[in-house]
Length: 482
Length: 95
Image (cartoon, rainbow over the protein chains, first blue to last red):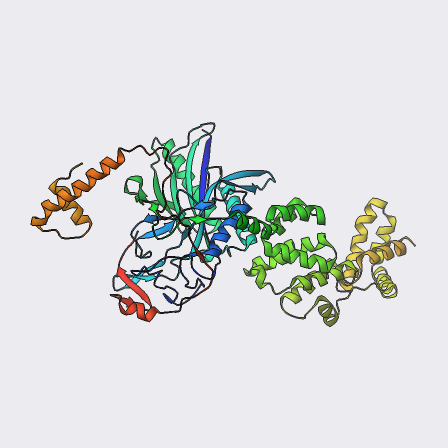
């Protein structure tokens, strides 16, 4: 049987406002517990929420970026549930009139094809605090610093058909919100979290299968694994004659399995109703227009520009535009280097490998865009070979020198392009290897091409890689045929 | 819709309030009256009426994104039943 997986994602994105969505308390990460939980966040009697203008603007920007309708009269509602990390007894959220309506996100798959994923809506809401269940004499500790941090929840239609597509979609959302600068998108710190609705059906079937909701997945890798393992669980269940029940499940990354949290019967009834403490939010067209003007160049547009302006392949341009910081780094580097393709190769190659190896983010790269650009300049003018360039890069990475020129000078790595010096080396190698010379001279053109590699190798070894390979080849050809 | 005495006892248990036997019957009557009123309201056809989010003919004023609150944790925690290491302590809850 051919099964099809159907996935819808709910992505929570923490906004980078300075203050909370309904209070003037700070949202800075890592403060001591409850030092940023004010009377409003604690839900002390008599307090009232006042909506943060920046959170509204951020949500509108996101809506414009995914081509969505902006709801001109948006309403906040109370989602009622009792849990101590939310002392009000409800989460202020949106339901009937969310600020962002239907939109669309284009994803690009590994084979280069693209698909449009529909966004059902995106709404503004507040985050909850954190519960610590370590032993406080049998009690739980509550930190409300995060309570009231603004979130947008982005709800997709069930348009995704594989775990890979779900990851591509999530990466695209990540890329859009970081380009817009409305979130830092840091999944490890919980700035982006994701719930996945997963169901399976036979290929060609119109009706959706019964879905399970997997809660709180906190990395790109886990999204892929959680969806795969949950889809397989459902397929196995059905093939064994069982039935999927609608329920909420938790993904356990240690065991790589999902397990039931609560079934539909036990599901919360949130009793949504319009929040009487907050009036409807009216959004003027003039605000939408002015935000539209502030819209930065978005990933898709940037990728297209990189292809046409710099002549890069779609693959290279996609890698470089996945994050705004990488794109900015590349453009700064390319400007200094004067060669976009070389710059792209170095950023996507050596630099990204070094960052991966040390688990560093680009912003913490020891090699700056200007330094890398300077290095490429020296490759282009033949001062150094590609091989030596890697040594210079290594030195810059380790902080041995401020610029490529400084490293080349200090370590004496400059390529030898002086004909006299090279000729001497060539003569020496020819004199030292009479048997190989004999063999070369007896060979036909086809074989000669292979045999000459031996001499080039010897000379590169003698020069510690600093001989200009092009010139060495020329000289060898001339001398060996004499 | 009218309620039975048993419903009142159940509601009281869920709401964690104690209701004396004497006031139970009066409460049953009053809550039943409220439910009756809701039945009457639900008979009205509202198909063409937009749900009202707020009775005031006004819209939300927004505040600038500025941190205005200072740390008053010590004051707040003075009235909390239990705290430790800056955390509020509550009966253990695992969802």
